[in-house]
Image 1 (cartoon, helix red, strand yellow):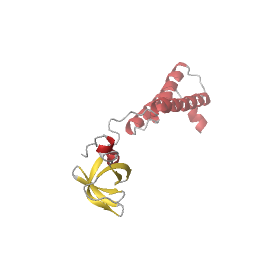
Image 2 (cartoon, one colour):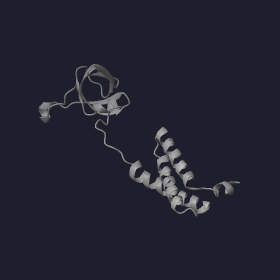
Image 3 (cartoon, rainbow, N blue to C red):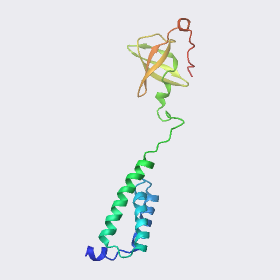
Image 4 (tube, rainbow, N blue to C red):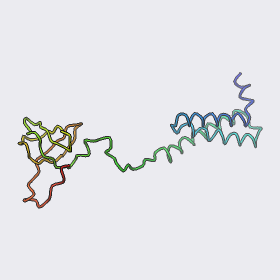
Length: 163
């Protein structure tokens, strides 16, 4: 049954398959169906100009081209990543690394709070009184790890803006 149907493969079958795969790619943009649609289109052209290819040869050539197309397409276009101009956009807490903040609440038993803009952030670190300037050294979810800022008179540096 399959051999009889496959034996009747002609160029327009491959063209219909290519168009169907392109429609699927447009509907589900996953960049998989495109790489299989291209060899189907090539098979349509190939069987148009060489109509005496057996169905076995057609399927083997199509399979080989599809595998090569998938591999090459993924290798050269699938791995392209563009640099983001705002890499921490959805990781708000990581944007505070290195910032100098002023404690809004004292750190007692390792926990306290600092104001960043109009928001209070939980902070963790050594016990310090309210109003102490601290630098964010690590981020753990929404908890900012802080350490006291060394006086600018000793280092000669100016602290970063607390924002």
